[in-house]
Length: 244
Image 1 (tube, one colour):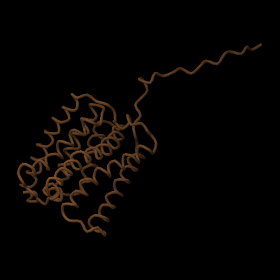
Image 2 (image 1 turned 30 degrees about the horizontal axis):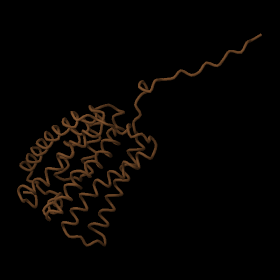
Image 3 (image 1 turned 180 degrees about the vertical axis):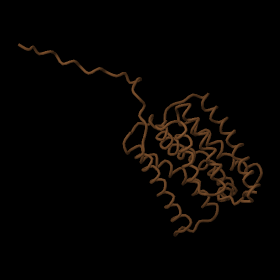
Image 4 (image 1 turned 60 degrees about the vertical axis):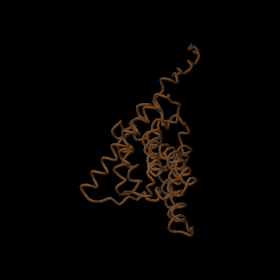
């Protein structure tokens, strides 16, 4: 007669050997949709709608809104499916990697400046759409401090969480080239088709590669902070209120 054998318990796979979970196309779509809605809201309330804002107030609004829109996109993507901060690269890192991120941020700042100067020299196209940031930073001490907080802290965190944390991590499913260049192209396009586009692409490539190598979003934030901090510091030390 057949005998009953005890059921063998399933083999436990150690957590360390499990493949990493990454966000995918649903997170990309939802995150970008939330960011796009925030841009439309900014246009409606800030420049086309009922709010009558002066140049300083409008510059502060735009500098804050980029970070808010990025964080909104990240929140929607996070709540959609994965719900693991580590899957988006939001994990602890070392001070060494933060210094590496800052150093590569300086390199990106120099590279994008040279690229923009080269394009301007070749084409004569020098219309800078970021003039509102200079207006905000040049609006007095309080406005300068708020510009630094919004443009150089809030915006890097929000945009990195969305464009590197969500989009780059999702596209890295398809390899480093697609992940780094694809996310950087999307990041650049969200800055508009203007002289800032190639500069944003350079920063995006550096930030995405630093995140990929470090495994954490925070060194990429350091890259972004260095680049965004350059503008209010330029206003602070030179008194410039607009692009040259």
